[in-house]
Image (cartoon, rainbow, N blue to C red; front, side, top):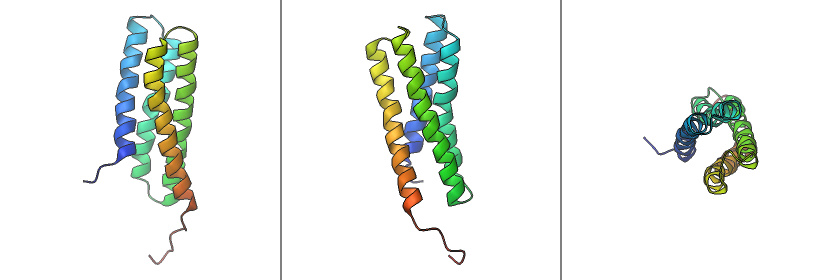
Length: 123
C-alpha cells in the first residue's frame, strides 16, 4: 500500500491531541477548552480518512474541506490555550506547528483537487 502523508500526519496529530487532552484534564484540571481541542484535533484525521474513501471527487473535496476547517479551528483553540496559560510557549509551538502544517498540506490538496478537470462519465 502506498504511503499517504496527510493520512499519517493527521493520525499522528490526533494522537498528540489525545495526549494533550489527557494532560490538560489531569494536570491542569481544564475540561472545557480541552474538550474542544480534542473534538477538532481528532476530527481532522477522521475527515481525511473519509475523504480518501470518498465516492467521487466532489465527495473527496467536501470531506477534505471539513478537515481543513477543523485544522483551522484546532489552531484557534491551541492559541487560546496558550494565551490563557494552559500551554507553555514551548508546548504550544510544537503542537501548533503540526496544526499549521496540516492546514498547508490539506489546503494544497484542496487547491489541486479543485483545479483538476472534472472526470468524464466515460472514463
